[in-house]
Image 1: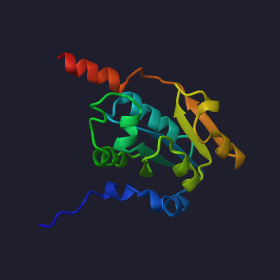
Image 2: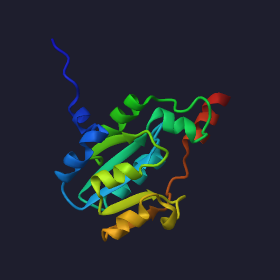
Image 3: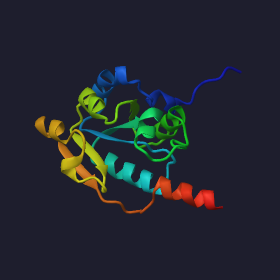
Length: 162
């Protein structure tokens, strides 16, 4: 029997294809980004809330090098980009998942021109990368308050103590 990749892997979108593939998604389009290294309840709750703001959602993940530059620790990310892309793509609320190697996702935002830009509650709206650009094309920007106070860093600390 030949190996057939799971259908959700079709949601993994190389950056150079993002503009064309995002343009085919239902509108309004939501965009969010992050490392999403070890997916936890806080992440999936946030992603579901973000997706509910529009008809489709693009998630851009930091590349492994981009995560390392954030200073989260020498052992981060725990999961490689390929693994993080697959896990994110498997979520029903995610329409497309892509990545960026830069320190910010600004180029991916410009590529897909979302009507709705979203980050977690630890980001004031005016500090969200892409806020100025999305508002310039009459989009909206949201900072969603955390319901579940979870963090990958805290989870890793707990695991290391066991």
